[in-house]
Image 1 (cartoon, rainbow, N blue to C red):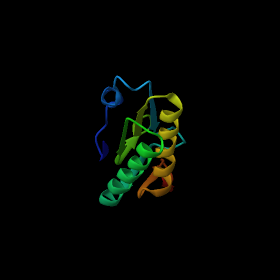
Image 2 (image 1 turned 135 degrees about the vertical axis):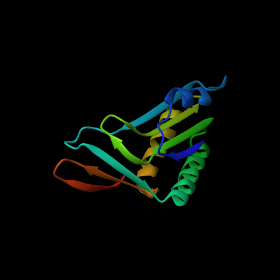
Image 3 (image 1 turned 45 degrees about the vertical axis):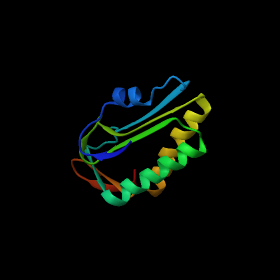
Image 4 (image 1 turned 120 degrees about the horizontal axis):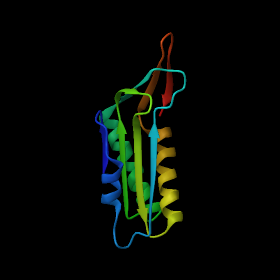
Length: 131
């Protein structure tokens, strides 16, 4: 599953969907808005292109690392410090595959998906580039 949404998500639900009797490992990545001296973050996406690119990245990871499941949820909109931005859940027969698949997805997402974040503080704002 690939989802880009303004709504928060349930990491527990993602993990439940990734479970299977053949999966010996489930790896999660949860990205949150950190307190970097700012008040909030705005995340924007070129939705259709981002969705397609995330699907392609997911398929690459599934094939390359023999994943049994891979889910990505990325938020857009105005997010406060501490809120969830992105979650990735990968399951595989072995931990090395699950870890490698999860790392591949987040690294490729940062390079390829048209997602941008802007940090907003009391006296300043700045575009950070791709998430």
